Image 1 (cartoon, rainbow, N blue to C red):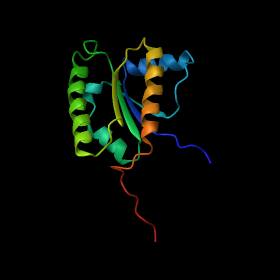
Image 2 (spheres, rainbow, N blue to C red):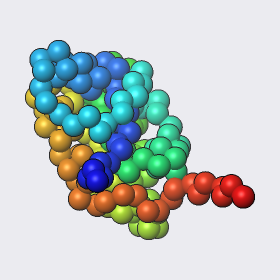
Image 3 (cartoon, rainbow, N blue to C red):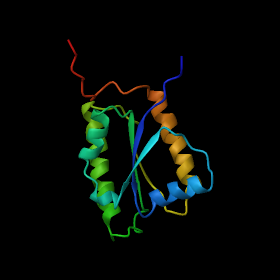
Image 4 (cartoon, helix red, strand yellow):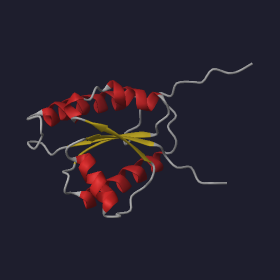
Length: 144
């Protein structure tokens, strides 16, 4: 029997974090295959409902990563993202909808491929330590 592996949905900024993921791949840096990358124009334009939908549809964890504060290609998109996601994460954990450690945020520039690979390993390890997600999963209808 194979060991359980978490499914991590990863939302990456097109200009920075996605570039770091691409560079990590081209440089053949090793990082877990558990992450499923969704490229966004900017994390500031990401709706928090995307995180909720990923968790509801069976993701064991979510990771959002964008440009470093002050380096956003859209001037201040990452400041908006930081504010939105800090509130969302706190609210989800406070209400008990998710356990602390299921949602992660980071700022990684396109030149930081080693940091991307290291953070990917840490995120997957943290979520793996929590085990499969038990809360907030949409129940499948039983077939008679």
